[in-house]
Length: 157
Image (tube, rainbow, N blue to C red; front, top):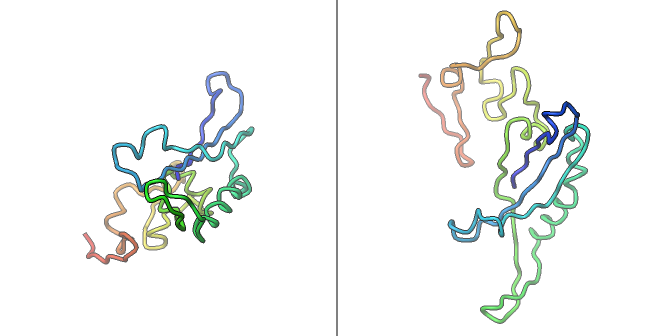
């Protein structure tokens, strides 16, 4: 699942936002997996601004469909000429950091904005702007990294 938003009228000064949600099946060969016929636009969210914490309302039909596919749907296989129980799962999502905050509900602003490292990451505040900065501190302070569902502990650099 890929989700991202953009402002189509950025040059004219009009405030407007469009968010798209695209789903791609990954059980195809790599050369056709990411081609246009196999990228399904499942949701378009228009509005004067981004959907923020109301994005789950727009995604509810997709969530219901994915739950149904998780339980299984009777499907006909034309090559085998028989029915089978097809199941599907959402493997991962691809998005930028602001979309991560909206889709996961995690705050991507402030000191604890990295969902993996959380409080193990020492952010510094910029002297004049006061904003949180993680420049060159990630390797020094993040002791555990999530790697394919397993916690990998490493020594401090």
